[in-house]
Length: 561
Figure 1 (cartoon, one colour):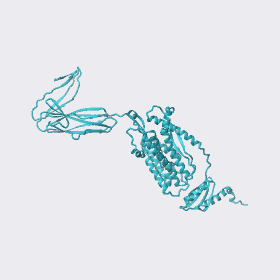
Figure 2 (figure 1 turned 180 degrees about the vertical axis):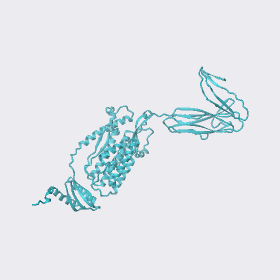
Figure 3 (figure 1 turned 45 degrees about the vertical axis):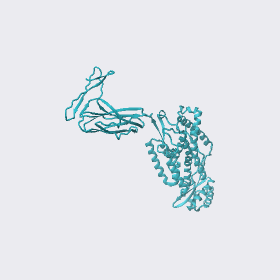
Figure 4 (figure 1 turned 120 degrees about the horizontal axis):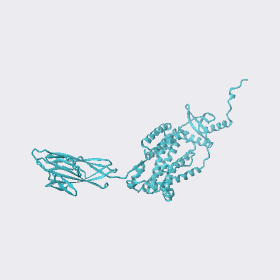
């Protein structure tokens, strides 16, 4: 007798058959069931789906299945809608003791970090380990930094927790991440919650993802304001010198600075730093990548297209890492790959967003723009302020023929490492009868030389390394001038540089042009020097010339050859 081939297929377990019938009746309360099947993985029901009533019906079905330790997922298969139902895997028992332990450790490490910041702010000498033996530093550092930082991080995670609960999604209490300030300067890597079941739909995905950043950002606002109010200390030149962490402030800080302006060279109070970390954490979490908070939001708003957005931002972060040197971005890219670049879909991926979720998503985008800075923090070495300047010119003697016009120029050069203000004072003297007759400029008149100084400023400000050239013109009167001399004495003064330089510019009008090989020299005993002096007669008549040489001999003067 031939054996029936179908007898080789074992009958399904009666328990599975009974469960399939029970689930079919349950699904039938909310959908018209066309077909049903099951296998060892789950149960499948082809249904007629009304998109208007589907969101509420699916949520009701999900909550009913949750009591049975099961969950549904809606999928499209060959143009038909299928409700697939699966069992939740066995989960270990959750204990709140781990949360309490991590909370206590993070309180300690953030108070420790706050003590270091407190000592640094007030110029204390205790090192990173020494502050542990300073109860006063630990107390004030904890109250001014650790406590507000923990409040911001805790509020962020509780925002996720309570909104998850409101959407009937099982979530853990916050797990804080302690880190010694010897490794990370702020004593923590933040906190997280564990969502212990699948997100039901795109609406919940947006609201749960945005709840944490919005709550944490709102908590950070009063911390920023109080911190800026307390930032009254300004750094002295000695305190400025050396290696420092430089914080770039995001846009939200500039809003507060309109009401609480900081003085120049102000040091941020530890409370202000806690507020800065709060918005920094907000910006990082709102990056639209993987399973970060921003990844939840873009997956809820854009669906499957969120993958391209996530890849695009990873590429941007890689560029920022190598162009700015802020390698923390690489750490976040690594985390995204470890926890999953592709965001898993919600159980119901077809129900559209409502206006409320779109407003929440737009708010999250706005907070990201207010909180993000491409280079949040960097290290820079500062040198003590140095104020100095030089005057540069080709020659301080200008020869003029009768009726000739010449341009005279000099350059001021800031040789320090800070901007500098320079005051310019001008006096003039004309040479007659072997004497200089001084007068303050521009009262000098009646000479055969006209100098125009109208464009010369009384004060000039030079940036670091800046050179600025100033020019004035000198004109000799026409006619047969036999001899005319004008001396301009310019005084350059900077109070900050504690420097006063006087330069003399001679304007000589004469038909004789004198060109020396050098102006100043020293002749040592037993040595000789060749000195060339060229005298050229430019007049149309003969001239006589007498040359007097004046030198110093010990403490006196000797004239003549």
